[in-house]
Length: 355
Image 1 (spheres, rainbow, N blue to C red):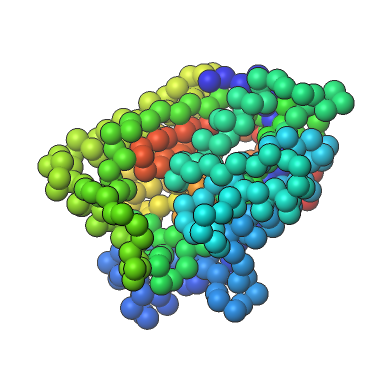
Image 2 (spheres, rainbow, N blue to C red):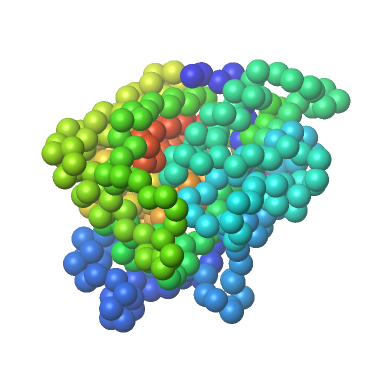
């Protein structure tokens, strides 16, 4: 869908200190073969009892405060908060979005948890854009704004960041993005988004069956084992793999077309933070671009931030000055379920957006 008056007002990221991947291999925590294939250098990893010992929602609040500070007048017009995550948020049966909203923008702003796995951040962008372009109450003629946040802390023993999924290492951190219906103070413009799904692929993350409740003695999550269980039941691994690629390719194609942007007009691409082997396949077969146009160098330093890879990747491009006025950035999501949201953003002004 093409968007006419949806603007990127500000971004923010909070990341834990890095843990070296080679050191994790030496300690037996990370498989040496995976390390060789993935080429991940380090991962953002919060240490218990350390200065970065925060819950996931606390990380989101820190990122949100940075994004709001950078958002200028949009920070005073937040009408909704959408908070996304993959893993435990610090308490059971608890709406963590309410905590993020309370500590970032106040007690009276409606807040909602969005759970679409690794695609949730970009899916939230599309939902927020629909709300902003759809109208609603206008605050003193200045438009409306939506705060989107993500956060996860993949803590042991229930989650083993190094072994939960082949081709990925999971990192801890919070991210935030403010979308606004007003161009005042904006750093970018959302040109288009496109979401495509195939719900028949949900079993890739579930496995072949169901459980009545959490296990009494939690074992670390093993997403690879669940996928293998699903493939054994379906007896068609190739078809499922090809179908996920088709869903993503269609999402990319439509987002580019709706934004009026051919692929050779894209200056940078932000993808899910996978290992190098997975990323190279996507770059070569879906996008036809070289690695240096992607966010790989950032990904290999911080790991996979759950739903937050795209906000963090865009924030990094802005903070480092790797994009400038007129540049267009393609963001490509993807989350088990299976869903993929792609978005095209045009950078309009970087003079104050990362101060």
